[in-house]
Length: 480
Ligand SMILES: CC(C)[C@H](C(=O)O)[C@@H](O)C(=O)O
Ligand code: SF4
Image 1 (cartoon, rainbow, N blue to C red):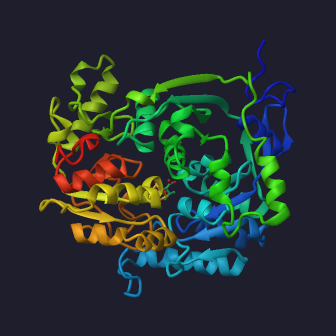
Image 2: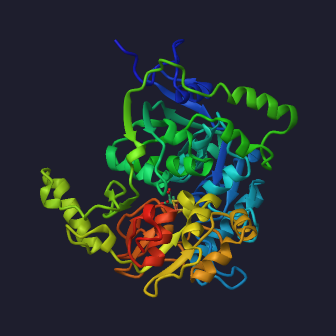
Image 3: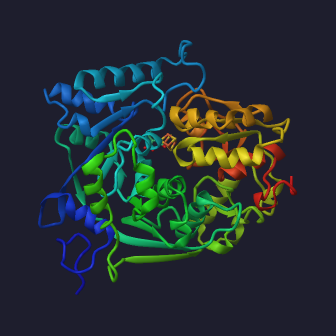
């Protein structure tokens, strides 16, 4: 008989997830329910107001303020922030975070701090995200931090309150899944294509009940930015978290970050981090293999991140789907997207292009987009914007002259934040506007009421902005 996934640690070979989970168990009940110690808590303005209010009402404090870091991201305007914010709701939410962090002694990056940005860009950038740690945030894309070999996942607002008060979280152990992607990836194909292809393969429920470890040379050859892109979208594949074993690239990324360990602490940390890998022979409850070497650039065509197809493909015909419920859902998706089955993906024209978000708003994403854009002009029918993931990404991009490339081509160059990833601020699609977006969700209304989102890589979004329709970046600029 095999032990249940939530069993107490065995002496045999363990996965990376098993190791981090076991290391953080404070108490374990017979039914497998555990109390986990939480090393790092990231906080943003949307899911924290009630949690702080809960503390206030019960006279409790934040147990470990120095393990808590707050930043404003979802609601902030990406235009000049010295101007009045016309949205009273976001003004109130931003003011509440400022007040709560002041009252409870939590470090806070406000909209005028250059360290401000999307919470999942900020954590790693500051060295707050470290290998082997447990990291939570009241935000589903907390899985991003798994790129450093951390166990990182989103929690709800009542759990935010629980973590603030106790620095622990009630959890049951998930099952282990390994997704192995072979390489090398072709030129023009990157992390976003990999993760969209994975979700297309396993489906949005494929990872339910699992923590995914990403492996294979296509994964290890990715930069830390690329690994973050992959881990970021684990949640869109239904998984509780996603992680990659930390290696020299992860350590080099973290060296000398403001909150990384220093001196002898760094040396000790490094020795521990080097043990953070799955033991040979460790058991995975599910194994998925993907051939990265033949992967094309991927475009989503529907209203779920599993609705993906090669840029060389055609909009699929839902009439061919045997399952009635699924067929109905995909017919609805095509209707919402205003697409006809059989249309060539490269014939789909765009109104808007959004380059940014915690999926693809990092410096490497902007470099990839800028490399495509350089010397070209945004199509006259397209409104395109670049929103750096943080103030530090923006500063770095400007030091490299990337802003000049984007501005010269006709892109807007904005202040950091979640922006048009979701319609919680002034950046949004008008009804029926069609957008090539580097974000992670294409749900109905995600980027604005009746807005139509196609998920793509930064290179694909940039090329679409120039051409006015999707193009295969493997042949850029010939195909434009
Ligand atoms: C607003 C927040 C709770 C939400 C999330 O949890 O992911 C947002 O970041 C998103 O991407 O939809
Ligand atoms: S950028 Fe998008 S996905 Fe990421 S935290 Fe913000 S709203 Fe969520």
